[in-house]
Image (cartoon, rainbow, N blue to C red; front, side):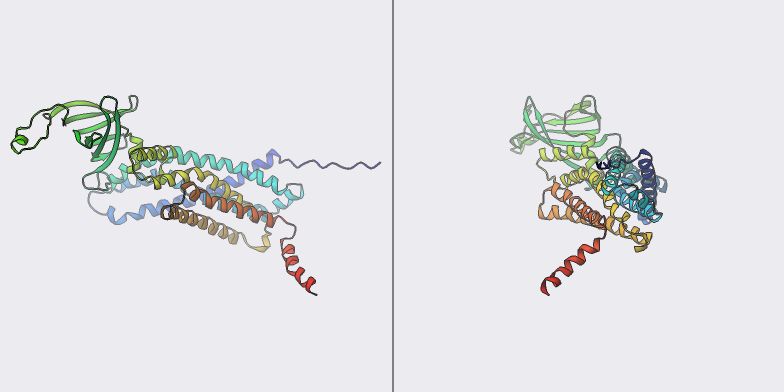
Length: 412
């Protein structure tokens, strides 16, 4: 009686997983350090002309560049993951280690699963930088960069910053405020704040000016210091000058107050959107900022696109590392390591350009934000899996030759 031999599925040993993880992380870290250092150098020399003027400081600007490094780590993560993975896998293939592993039973599916597990560590570290470290560092870098360049703070208008705030007062109903302030520091304090409050009929009801405004996170409101305010149509007080001119404006006398509690939907996290680029904000900040702008009937297209790209970014890193696996199946004699690494660089740059292209198309052609953010990653995943299937065949060129020769046989 003949007994058939049952082949057990190959399981990846723990030591092999540790070895692969160490080699991949080492290569990715090396590429990351090289790219971050290069971009930091470009940031330093970008403002050389302005930093030569009086009132500027190289020390503060150097500190601002250092605080911008976590954001650079987050931006470069997909390209660094791709190039580092290609370099590590090609080195293993060149030393015939991958050939020995495949001969021992390591299948393509097992290698792909192992690479995905290793990639999850890179994804977690990148999300930690993008959602935790980079937004805090960038928020601290904004006033430092402005101080280094001789500005109190970067502003869009000479009159300061203007924002629209909607507030629902239980006693008086919905009110709309047009808020203006001169500057905003990293500690959450507004300087020279002024706002005009309008009722549902668009009549001005209150004018307030404060020297400073400090946010109270426990109470969820602001404390205005050095306040001067005036009410309209609430406390009917005749204005002699207006009466002589035949005007019917009713205003209260100016009232000076040391401190005043101010209820508002504005918060330091929302105000960060005025100074920090959307791609350097966390996903939670982008979501809150989008909700705030939408509640005030303002355009949210660029914020929604940045939020969608934040959600898809971890998948982009995962896909970049999966795309590197087909390079391990190419024989070393078919191309040197430098050629393969150069090909990885071109793929990474191409993915970055396509991603930016779809971002602009989203703004121009009104594509849904999540479609524009997900389409490059989905395309890269499909192309990478097709390439992996192709190189994993015993002889990929044979199928092509059979397709070419088959019509000739039938025509004979």
